[in-house]
Amino acid sequence: MNLSFTINDLMIECTFNMGYNFLMDYSIFKSIHLLAVLAWSAGLFYIGRIFVYYAESTDTSVKQTLGTMAIRLSRYIMLPSAIISLLIGLHLAGMSQSFSQGWFHLKLALLVALFGYQHVASKFAKQLVKQTFQRTSQWCRVFNEIPIVLLTGIVFSVITKTIGTSLVAMGVVISLLIVFFVSKKKSK
Image (cartoon, rainbow, N blue to C red; front, side):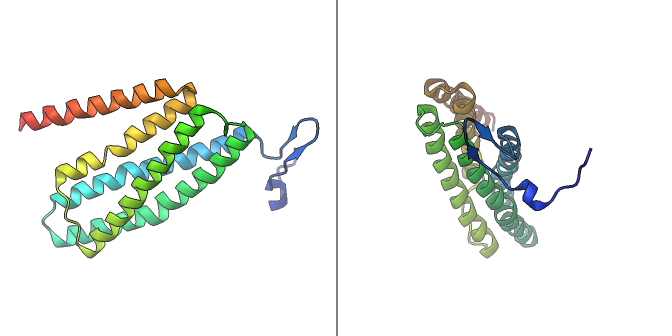
């Protein structure tokens, strides 16, 4: 068994004769996409926590460190993994002919919202570095939950391929978050 290969061996060859002939098949693209999505999701979840820690801190050096962490997370983990997720995801959608399906339109709309969240979070990260960020801890906690609501809709749309189920799942997550925040507020 010869395990040596060149970079040309890894190039994607898509020939559409009577079927598909891929050097990298769908499952490999899907695996890379999933890894990129996991990295992106981890960054989206963690940057919100950094905002909470910043809002609760009174130490200037801690705030500087958190600002540096947020910028690095945004630039070196979230942005590259988001781009990889998007590009490979679009390629997968083309391979599976998903562009004309309703569930995929919902997924794209939720992805646009997720990219919007990331953009706003990146702006906030810059504010952390400049120490001009003025949000409360409670506001940051609510802001931190936006990705889980959006990602719930995305995952349910991809797995179930039904818009209704995806919206119900998002509604359940929002309801649980409301119950959590209300009960936490009452316990104070």
